[in-house]
Image (cartoon, rainbow, N blue to C red; front, side, top):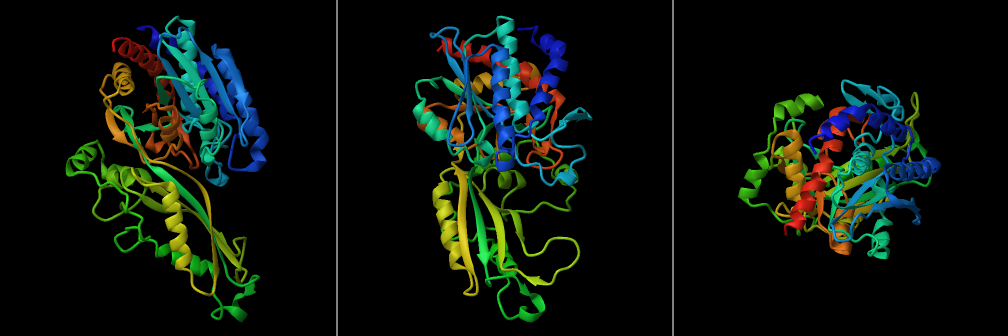
Length: 458
């Protein structure tokens, strides 16, 4: 095992070039115009698993984009790790804000710049290369199964059915996921919780056609004005969400839990400098770490309507739209929150407009244990390669499938990610550190080693 870092260093250029080939494929699942590319990406993932030495590799169709499955069973008496990740990526828009094209990966300042570099192609491919390394050097201590999907960025709507239909094939002892981040490169951490999600799109309709704003302005409702007022009313002056019943199921943290969370390294001034903001902002009575990891949120992700082209057009629009996401915390049901939002949003619409709320996708929040073999193995692996014991930390993002792994397969998940919150995932100039990518490939074999030892020692 002491040669792992040497092997990674020796093969680092090849590992990077192979990742770059995947990053060049624009596998955007949210936009149908990329359908051919998403399917091409599934083929590329399959080929990479085959090349690494996986067996029974296949592209499993779903009503949406396919799931790529592969495995290596070396001994049925040994423990089995199910590795999960996704090959789809977020849309690259707005393109003009990228320093370099989103699907032409480049390295700048030690970072790999490309859409999907951190979320999640770079982190998935770490597992493929780590598996290859273990297999080629006789270091694989337990069985491995890979399940890599193409719809995570649009809600994983077909994954639960796949789990239900493939319980026997997916039997394992734990799930290993790298789709999360660490506190810093010199402060390793492991996610112990994720927020859930409710995502909706709203449409506000006023007059039956666009109108001249001089002839009709002031006489009929302007859907954009109304939509802005409705959205503004969803929070009070303390930035507390005002939807009735929204907080009913929220489990408040104890003071001890809040103190532990806030003991994690965090410099608010550095945070503001990094984001180029004058001050932080959020729900009154909570710290930034609490707001971004343990409190529910409501945010507008996009809003549009009327004329947005060059120059001026004095129009009173017929319609206005917004996309809204709500991040949820343990015990909040995404279906319940979506229904509460829909009922409330429709109730506050003035008589001059019609409102339609269209649910998109959602996911349950999760908390993962820190006293399990999988967590201890991940912590020991990171301590081995980083030289520091990782800090348990809550994550603000959502991975809906983690709750399904426990509910359907009865498996606990360990969230051993190597990204950073500053990687700009979902944003222009998404990037992933070369250090992080290679450190992941180095660390994962240690997880397998320690997990196998812990399982065998009871």
